[in-house]
Image 1: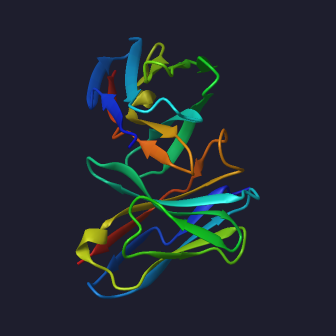
Image 2: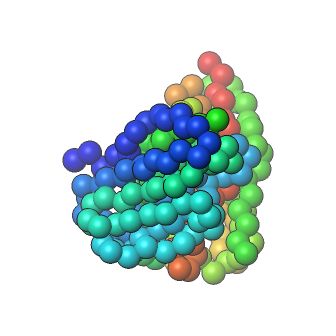
Length: 113
Length: 111
């Protein structure tokens, strides 16, 4: 039982390049989330999914797209990377909404030059 | 809009001391509050989850309390150890999957 895993762990992109971050969970959780963490700003929700085939915008969705084709995977895409997207990205999952706790992955450190 | 504040931003204590970390939030309409620990360069590890109907939760040397009406939660760490050094984050879950995080308290326990 690996919990929540993220691929890759580190990545450096040039402005304008694209990439996809992969999050996988083996806990059969319905809900999955993508956050970014920036110094002094706490974690902010980018997008989330309440089930396979569904996605919704969070607090800071601009410049990102997501897909949840399989229940266990949640992909975060950057179509045209910008330096402002330099951050640490965390994926999380939870069984259901409301009272359930979130489980986090180890993070992906992305630098856009 | 929910705002979560953690004070102090950093704390340094000698080993063995009992300490309290604070978390305050502006909107009391929450489902739960979760305390996390984050080590440098690592992900978040869940410490305690308090449901909105609960007043406290305990795990080992950790005790978290919740006072919804006043918008406050505290994390009490007993007999602190150098291994407790980390950043502690609180997160409040509201409606529509809205989870708001504080910016954390960086704790250093000095041997």
